[in-house]
Image 1 (cartoon, rainbow, N blue to C red):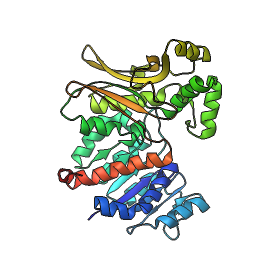
Image 2: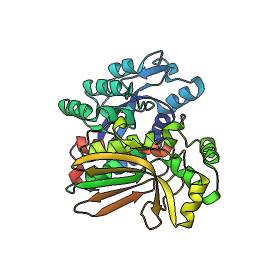
Image 3: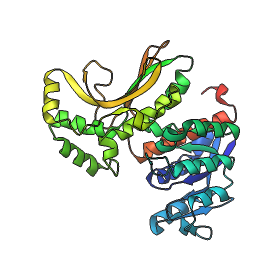
Image 4: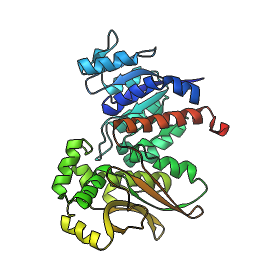
Length: 352
């Protein structure tokens, strides 16, 4: 049986959900995938805990719930212990980086990832920032350290976009990608179309439901979609591109009148991200588009996401679905962990 120790940096909603999943699915992972994951280090914004032996997940969860920080973990926790100190003290096999996304420079997550690789850890992240700003650098460092870098949860959570492009379309050239990869904006546009809400009403409802970012401008101004499409562009189509290089527009100027007119014309508004080639150069564009009802993305509603890949050999392939929220996001991290364990031990050839 394969065994891995984990160091989790960032113990918010997704990190806590991941710990619960690892506990609840422990027997399943051993039986189905022949792998066991144990947590040996955790850092949150207030403190950390490091252990040579597996930490007790129930105690870890009780500590964060009742005390507010893993730094209060009995006997071993340290308040004010920084994430870097935890990484450097940990002798874990895999670093899981789950801190909030910074779209300005990818920090401090980028520093954490660099240090994890230098500490001879594999790295799994759901953080868009480091991939957008330093994908090539991270990949090169991982290769030098003979370690794996996984980021499948950074693009659309439970929807396996990077994985499909990398594994399932292997051998084909991806010529273009288009997608609905932000559940908040899709929810707002759906509610405007189906229930005649104003944009402001749709946004307020999304915030009440907890599906909007803390700073909703990241969603409604198209930044989240842009960063996700950039990740697909650089990892699957070899693009050299930054956020400031792309054409980006959000949905704030879409009015009920636009929605009503589109409905009369048999079309529907969606916030689409597009990756395409123009004169041999890979480009990214994000903005609201009115698409026909026979378009494969037209019926992707509310918080659903979907991506269409256009290829030279396999035609066009659309994948859709996947729930939104902390549990699906944590499950996407677990997916990367399981696949990492397979590749690390050379067991992909054994089949499913």
